[in-house]
Image 1 (cartoon, rainbow, N blue to C red):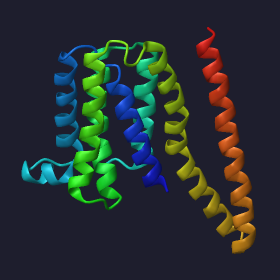
Image 2 (cartoon, rainbow, N blue to C red; image 1 turned 45 degrees about the vertical axis):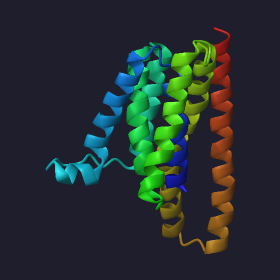
Image 3 (cartoon, one colour; image 1 turned 135 degrees about the vertical axis):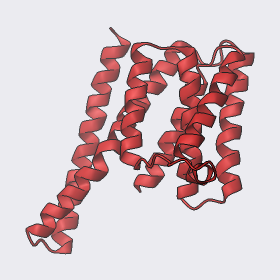
Length: 200
């Protein structure tokens, strides 16, 4: 489930970052980010170039994405957003590949989606207004923090329940209630964060 949430998060963030591109120079920034992301994180390219790929678990990648989202909320820069869109496109490709999709699909779907967003952002200046991008980042931020923290918390909870000798039914009941509580807390905090940001 973490891998699916990570792939969804990568796809949404790649499109959200790409929507902030201003001018055709942003496409060059996106290409630089894509090449950087593939060279740094893609094992099949790194083996050919005798480089060691950086292997990030989905939780750490989601935490880095949350920091990038906070940075873009604090100081939005079109060039940085375009490069982040390229890196997130590379991560999206790798996430789809890790889910077992065919290599062609893992490459074509992210590239076509992000390139369509780039084309619309360059052709129409009003394609994605600054407020709309800010709201997209605010919605992606709690999702990124959830993907970064919840899997490790759930694993820790399961380990604690196993050490206490709980049977499967009791453990499932406790896990369901605890997971629901965590989702509710994240939704509540993100609502307060959005309200504070929107009406500041």
